[in-house]
Length: 280
Image (tube, rainbow, N blue to C red):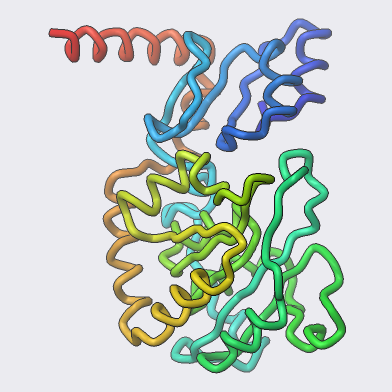
């Protein structure tokens, strides 16, 4: 099993082993083309996922980020704040830049003026940059220097997350940190509109916003959130609502995989029964 890995899909077929794939990115077309023909079972988020793979598809009531950030699996460690000379009452913002090297990032575009983003946000709190590529020289002093395993703890305590990284945007949202994603396709349209997870987290739970590379609109929303001193508390309340609707994905995965393939057949039977009830 893996998160959409062509390598495992192909090897599994060669050695005659079933392959279970977890997908959450509807427009990762190259990976889907390379993987789908060799995948036995495709596990996706619930009805918000925008693609239908027929009988092989199993939908679970959650997001992949809830496999490792559900409160049953993760509690933030406040010691990361000590490393950065912060307290739980300090306001700080995490800004993320990606390298655009992933196959599903080809042709996409993100933040146009990183300096403007940082200088605007630092009026409201300390800014930390997480970047897959070296930033421009004037932003080097903002680079975040912590061990990778401490990043999610820092994200949980942040006042705001804004950036190009889609997974981190979802991670921030499920941790109850206000999240803003800036990314567009070649047509200049926000890629969040092609992601069922993003649309559900924004429209149903209000935990996330996404914009094309329109920095004015994105920064306007960021400033609005930062000027609201109750925003973090409000986002925690929204998070509680999301968690009430979603599952511990790690626990679900463990049961599904350990009971496979019977678990897959059970799911299909339950889905057919549900559809029959809807028809009635």
